[in-house]
Length: 371
Image 1 (cartoon, rainbow, N blue to C red):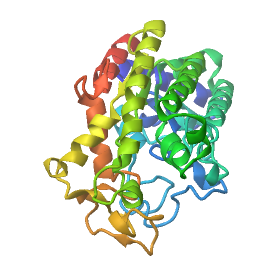
Image 2: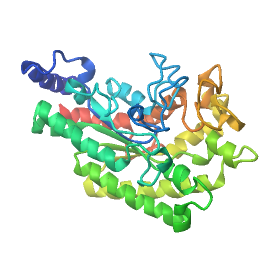
Image 3: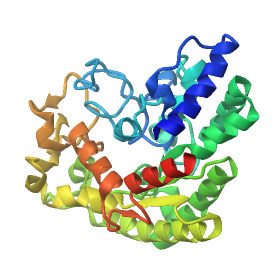
Image 4: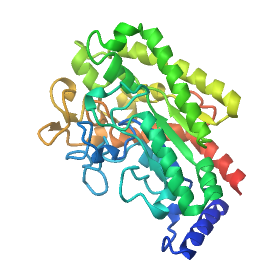
């Protein structure tokens, strides 16, 4: 945010100081707010507070995080929201369930994401206690009530309207639902094309609800090359090639999602929804890892079994010595270095990677509007 925007934010915090709610405004609290919704690719630790197996709060997760401790991020270090927060000039968003999220911290935003969730409420049922997307949206409403109590209704609305929102959903609806087991309920109910159409129709409702709740800049990531994750190579591939069923699912899903985002932009204004082509970004370094300085995109750094893709990453797992050489940290999730490449394409990539505008352009435009 420009100095003018920062001054407005800091002025708001000064008002809060005057009524004795907080003591000090820090620079990071003057950055644009950031809200995150979705699954394990963007969860900053909400599942730490839940009784679920879908969690990353034990070593060696977090081995390269600044504290060298597991935080609940499914990464060796920073994840995609952390790196976007850096680009916003902000501290990382706290998990919504964190007891630390109160007072001036609310102005930074919040991360509502929960590992294991999907577009559908029956996705990830094996993880039992996770924050499904319907509950994430309820928490967003609850967050806004807290923000209004802190700064007043008008200022709270301004914080939400000016915020950047990230939502990442869809992968689990295939991996942990449709293709979870042979002859799954959803695969008996729908052909794959019909299932994708159903997913898209449900996702559209979620995206419209975000707008209704005040979101005006929403970065929406499609699914990556699902069949290329080490877990799927271990489970489904005999020759190390990406699984064709999951690749077809992603190839059906992503263009239909892009079409919905274009339709919604026509309704609400160009650039309200920003489409990030996760398939293209990921596939670049999966198809040619050496071009990006990686040694392999077929083996996870941490895991066991074929491709290190079986089971969870634990202290008993095989673990690589140099995480920067690996695209995948564990059976499904990228390393911090891969996450940084992904975000760099979101920030400055061409229309092949992000449309209708990249994030750098959006942030510059918004900064001018806020002056």
